[in-house]
Image (cartoon, rainbow over all chains, first blue to last red; front, top):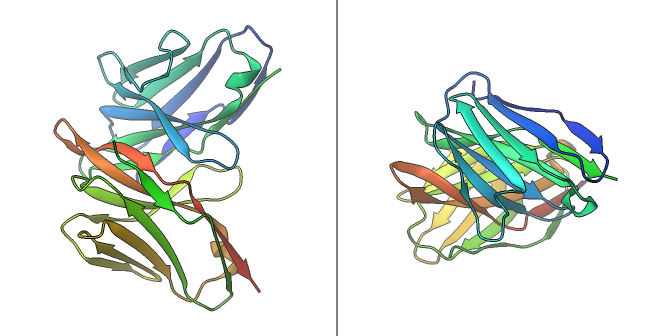
Amino acid sequence: GAVVSQHPSRVICKSGTSVKIECRSLDFQATTMFWYRQFPKQSLMLMATSNEGSKATYEQGVEKDKFLINHASLTLSTLTVTSAHPEDSSFYICSAARLDTDTQYFGPGTRLTVL
Amino acid sequence: GEDVEQSLFLSVREGDSSVINCTYTDSSSTYLYWYKQEPGAGLQLLTYIFSNMDMKQDQRLTVLLNKKDKHLSLRIADTQTGDSAIYFCAAASPVGSSNTGKLIFGQGTTLQVKP
């Protein structure tokens, strides 16, 4: 149990386009999901906390208009990188908080490359 | 805010024990986690310890927590080449009714296991 999937696993896009990344908890419900960003050889940085049915909470320095988060159901959160630029290229990882164990489980990550 | 520090690199021989250390600053952290990341992959939860525990053992993994010194360690017994990866410790601070809340990650320790 406690499987989290992300789609797509890898995406290459042109500068100026928007990219949507999905995060799904497959076998449990998650009222809270988290989005992280990881640069090469660096740690994970929390971008935002996504709560089902309400607005996401963004960390300081993260542009909410650039990184749109929608937590549409108890098993799905999406991150849309709008008007992507090469500096947005990164590894994006989501996690879902499982309420019964109060533990976060991570997705496999999405590698975004903006040309 | 919370700050989590780890040593960056550890090299051991196959069959030896590995000890990865981590320090954190926020004494209100409720859960402390160890995650494993293999190249190009997401994070795999290895184990976690609640802040009122001193030790937790799970097969080859032993977690020790010194709450007074805010020091956490992960010991891997009989280290195998398949254990080569980056290991992240993370501290969770409560958010609302959830003890999981926000995870703050260390920089990650690269474990190299030599045959």
